Length: 376
Ligand code: SF4
Image (cartoon, rainbow, N blue to C red; front, side, top):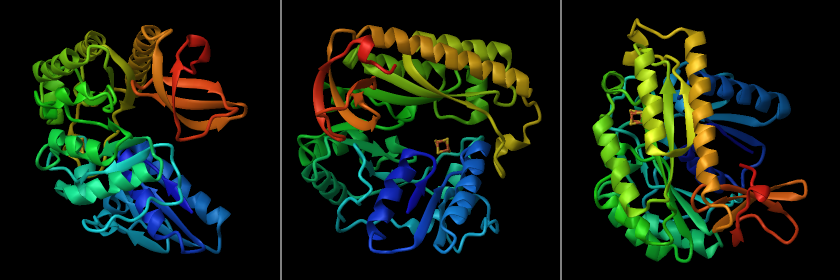
């Protein structure tokens, strides 16, 4: 049994290890996360639940929590740090029994940056890219098994050695007829070449940019690789290639030293850029990070209020974006059924709900989207 916590890269690794362990019995693996204090908490809860529900199983704790909290085993029988997860570079194994509607392909691991709030680069080591023949083989296998969408993921996806654009061009050949979606890409990695990929109808017009803040002093204190002008340039490039592209992003509120004015600038930039979905994180200090030593923290109530306003703005912009596609055809991949309904995701990140009868998870269907059929 596998419990996955955290990012898409973790999900891809869980699938890979689950495939290798498919013969093993009575093993529970928790693939952990430590990106925020809440992720630590989720990890602890998952381990406790696994122990309670499977008292006789061997309990394996894997991933970022192990690297971030040396000596804190949470009572697991085996600890597997990130470095032991392995990065196979040769033969592709079959995707595992854990069947998802979309195939998550990890193309890269690790990060060479040193963002001051982030613990991930400490738990995952330097950036390393998987070799092209391996990735092509994986993509081919996924398409052969019937997957109709491949999500490219990595801790710092845009740092893929040799460039993302050449990689995607090769993978599009290997994975036909499946489509490709990017997970998060750092704004500094939006090169002039990258948006040309969106000319291919099999590349989902969806980009997730982890903006974090719309204020230069805050971005500098976070030690991000772009400033507001650089971010604007990236958005302009992708909008020139695909004006209707779905832009989603991450925002961090309450970073030490973030003034009200900084926060208002962030809201203004979100609005100007036309994000249609936001993941809003309230800053929490992580052990051994530079920002944890910054003294000028934002009060909890104020941070909560900022988070509420950013979430609200994200919802409003999302509604506006979705309204633009009413009555239009969307290419939806069905995900999971809930009762008599099934949910799916369009190429441009619109969540769609339809009657489940006659529809199967993982299949692609062209639907005419109406608000009445949308889960929003
Ligand atoms: S880019 Fe920054 S936030 Fe992202 S993993 Fe690297 S150090 Fe962490």
